[in-house]
Every structure is written in C-alpha cells, then in structure tokens.
Length: 252
Length: 324
Ligand SMILES: Nc1ncnc2c1ncn2[C@@H]1O[C@H](COP(=O)(O)OP(=O)(O)OP(=O)(O)O)[C@@H](O)[C@H]1O
Ligand SMILES: [Mg+2]
Image 1 (cartoon, helix red, strand yellow):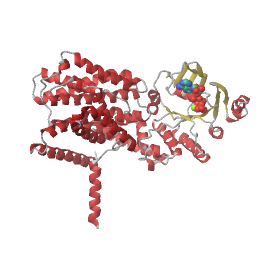
Image 2 (cartoon, helix red, strand yellow):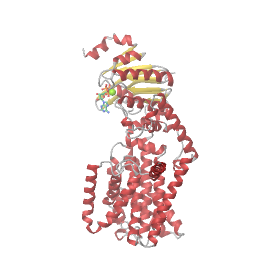
Image 3 (cartoon, chains in turn blue, green):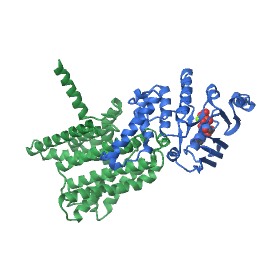
Image 4 (cartoon, helix red, strand yellow):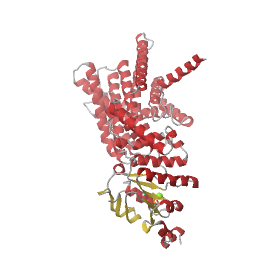
C-alpha cells in the first residue's frame, strides 16, 4: 500500500490556477524529486499535502484515509513531516527546545501535572530530553543543544529544521528546497545527510529542488511540473533527455 | 525529582518567606506606613494582571488590549458573591477569587474562540471593543450599582493575602510556561505555521493560553475589589488596560520577573504622579519611547531574574576567594 496518494488535486487562488490535475503515489522507501521552474506550483503542492491549504479539487490520501480537510497538526500525527523553503525555526528558542516542541504530540501529561510537577511530568520530560539529545547527536549537533537556533550558521539551521521534522516521527518527509542558499560544499553534505536519513529512519522522501545535480544524483524518480501541471515523470535519465523539460527550463 | 530540584524549591520557598517576614515586620513597626502598604497591595494586583497579560502577549504573541475588562468582570463577580453569601472570610475570599477568575475565563473563551481562529491581530480590535462594552455595561446595569459604583464589599485583602496570591500566580505561570504546554504556547509566538507543522494544535493553545490569561486577570480584579471595598466602573477604562500593556513592554515581553519589577516601579510612580493625572500617560508614553530607543526588548528582555543563580554565583565567588 502506498504511503501517500493524490487523485487529480488542484488549487485555485482567486482566478489563478496554481496547480491542476496533480496525481502522485509514493511508496515506502522511495526518494522522489519534484522539480519545475519558479512559480510552477511546487510549494503549493506541499501545502496541499500537509493541510496548509485544502485542495480545491481532487483527493489526498494518507494510507487509506482522505485527509483533504485535516489540519496540519493532524496530518503530522499521521506520519507526514515537512520543512519549509524559507527556513521556519523557532528562532528565539534554543536548539533543543525546537526539537522538544516537535515531541509535543507524543507527550500526554496534563496542565495539572505540569503545574504541580507530578510524576508524569518528570518522567515524560526526562524521556524527551534524552530523545532530543540522541536525535541531535545523530546529526552531530548535541553541542549546540542550548544555542539559540537563530544563532546557528545557515547550513546547521537547515539541518535543525530537518531534524525537527524527523522528531515528529514521519513515514514520509517533504523537503522544500533544502539546498537553497547553500554553497557546493554544504550541498554535498546535505546529500550525505539525506542518504543517512533514509538509511537510519527508513522514511520516504519527497524533495523539491532547484539544484539539478542534487536531484539527478539522488532521486530514483522525478516529477516535473510547469504552470501547475505535470509535464514529465520518470527516471533521472528519462527526464534529462525529455524535450518538454528542456523547453521548460531553457524557456525555449 | 533530583536533589538539585528539591534544593531549588527549598531556596525559593525560603526566599519567599524571608521577604514576606521582612516586609511584614516593617509594616508592624510602621516603617512601612498605611500609605505605602496600600501602594504595595496595589502593586501586587498590578503584578498579577500584568503577568497574566504577559502570558497572552509576551509568550503567546497575541495583542490583547482589554485586560481591564477581564479584571472588571472578576472584580464584580467576586464582590457580588461575597456580598450575597455569608461564609467565613477565607472561604468567601478564595471562592470569590476563583469564581471571578472563572467568569472572566468564560468571557475570554467567548471572545477568544472567534477572534483567535483567524490569523493576524483581530484579537487586538476585539479585546479593545470588549473592554469598552464591559465598562459601559457596568455603568448602566443596576445590580452592579451602576455609575455610582458597587459599595459594601468586605475587606478581605491585605498585605499578607496579596503577597501569597502573587506568589501563587507567579509560581503557576513559571511552572506552566516551563512545560510542554508552555513550549507549545511559545512556539506559536515564534512561528504559527511551523508550530502547526510539527504537531501543535495552534488554535487550541491560542484559546487556552488566552483563557488562562483572562482567568488570572479576573482573579486580580477580584483582589482589587476585596482591597478597595468599592468598585467604580469608570476605573476599568481603556487607559487602565494600556497601563498593564506598558508594564509588560517595560518589563520585557516574555519575562515574568521583568513584569514584577516594572509593576512595582509603576505602582509607585503612579502614586507620585497622582497629582498631575493628565500628564501621567504622557510621561508613560515618553518612558516607553525612550526605552524602545535604548533597549527595545524591555528591562529584562526575555531573561528571568533568578535568585538561585545569583546566590550560586555569589557562593562560587566566595568559595574562590576563600580558596586563596
Ligand atoms: N496563498 C497564495 N495566494 C495566491 N497565490 C498564491 C499563493 N501561494 C502561491 N500562489 C501562487 O501560485 C503559484 C505557484 O506558487 P508556488 O509557491 O507553489 O511555486 P513554486 O513552484 O514553489 O515556486 P518557487 O520555485 O519560486 O518556490 C505562483 O504563481 C504563486 O504566486
Ligand atoms: Mg516554492
């Protein structure tokens, strides 16, 4: 069974049709690339999948369930995690608090237990403290636990955002242009990080990216959209030689 | 619970009791006379309401401009209750304050749900209107005493009562903020979309945080009635709400200890400026502007003043000095 499936979803903003007739299916252990020129509708697709926008047409399935009307926080609990094109960290909070917030949904102690510092409070707080530090450790960031997240260098901010998304324990991870603003060295490290995540967390990844070498290098399957429509789909080699794709990217 | 936590509790409780004993003694021997005692009590009420506003604005990031309205609801509810029933003092006091808080919280819920479901600063406009409606309603209702005010409220609040009420409220807020619920509230101020994307039910927490804030403001209002013995609806105007706002900004958005310092300072300054009432708010505005220019995040920013850290630093220093 697929993790995620969409049937002909579309999104209209006022008169503007940002995305139309978009269908996709993602299975376990896949790494799929979503590419297209600026304004093609890639981020809009992510927003529809994660519940930020309700699609104006079609259906989104997570497993068997239709999630069109679910709120983003509900969709996260169903195993869909994401990052944002313009990094959205909790800037004025520490690195570890950024992660702990993502563990919120796994915790259950009440306000009363919090205020009276009950047994459950200590137990759960201790557990997530350990889990959060372990997770940071996997990304060589345990040293930064108490740093204000806005004080991290750019590359680490991207990494922290991915790390935070992983803390929600997703089955499918959506990455929106994770290499944006990175230099070649950072991009190379990012590719290694992505490979590591797949190996370690057994998640599928849907990746939006402008950096062709990155997409072609790591994706098994690529979907190309232009003006909100799919213009090509296939393996990196098929995409490379596809005339429509070349046309869209070179503006013929 | 580890040892460090317990020793922290002990240090804090000791500090709270020592400060109480000192002030209480100064009141007994009349070093703090009735006049200053009164200012201290008002300062306590300011601390409670301003801290509640800090929860809504400093931590949750929602502009709330009608806390005088919640205070008024709490004050009138508690006072009417105490006048109506005939129970022992502390039963009436505690039940009255809780009741005042609950009714204020219910009003918070009623205006919070529609206003907070939307993104953006709708809450500012709604709370502003709410505060005015409450004031005008109180002026015109007969069972609240109308424009003449509500008289004959028992005096249940003195220094001791207000001191421990402040301690209770501050302890509650600290414990609340430093929990998963508090982190959820902080994350909303930081970035609502990101918070939602990692599993925080943002609408729930916005409403929840706001209702808790309204509840505490209601408790503060109740205490005001039990201290003043008379409630004048004209007191709960927009400028009163603005004063709490000024305290929060002065002390630092997201710093409870900053709020305490600013509330104390303002309560005293208020008294000294009483004779030039028209100029009071001009002076506040100027203070704010000057502060914004030189220290735009308030006195303490987001930091908290910690007695324990201070003591630790002090004891470390003396240890080093002893060592050589
Ligand atoms: N909330 C919105 N309201 C109105 N129009 C929008 C909204 N969000 C996106 N659009 C429009 O939809 C189109 C697709 O935008 P989208 O952000 O999905 O593109 P993208 O493929 O992610 O582009 P980029 O590579 O620049 O990130 C654009 O024309 C954009 O202006
Ligand atoms: Mg985009």
